Image 1 (tube, helix red, strand yellow):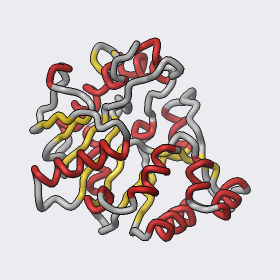
Image 2: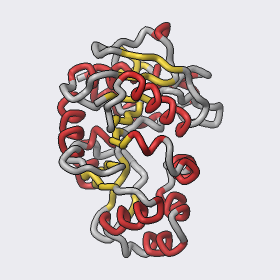
Image 3: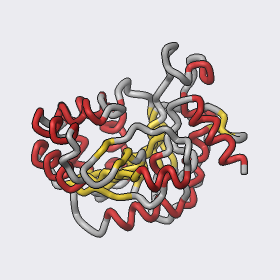
Image 4: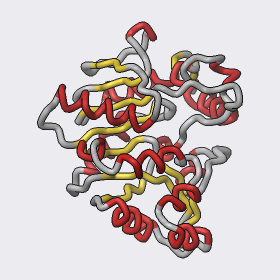
Length: 254
């Protein structure tokens, strides 16, 4: 399976991390002695399930490295456009490959065994989209001060994982819906509004289980999907704010 690493984000002056980047890529912020993305690339390097790595948003001049065959692509401007470009490149490299990993560059605590766990768990079924979530209990046991944004479901509270698996067809179909969802990915309630007013109301009143959410979303966009419940908090511990950056620096310096 090929991995697409999205590294095109450049914080603007109103972004909490702007002071750490000053117009440079967020992926290159130093975390315990190396760029944040390098921690992710090290995990992919050691993952048995990863064949090739495609980095979007950086060039070879950035100095980041991966021990798997690596391709660099320029930032396409939008998250969805980056994913589409990455999938197209993956199909050039591996025409018969049906699935790809989509990995954010801002989850530096990711480890190789976690990547392999996701690849193995996902391929137990043949769906179009595998979307990972981490429960509040799992996250706060590992990172008590993470201060994530939680989606409150009927039977649990969850946040999204930042490494997921998709079928390559997802990069050519339902693009309008994906653009809308990705644009609202930091707000579960706004995402729910995209899926319909009834879904939004039920989410507000905590009437939906994770199975309900998956069913409603997949029916709306007419694909087969599955929620992956992560036992590892690291998959959802993305660096969005200064206190999360300092947490990761302290954690990984150990």
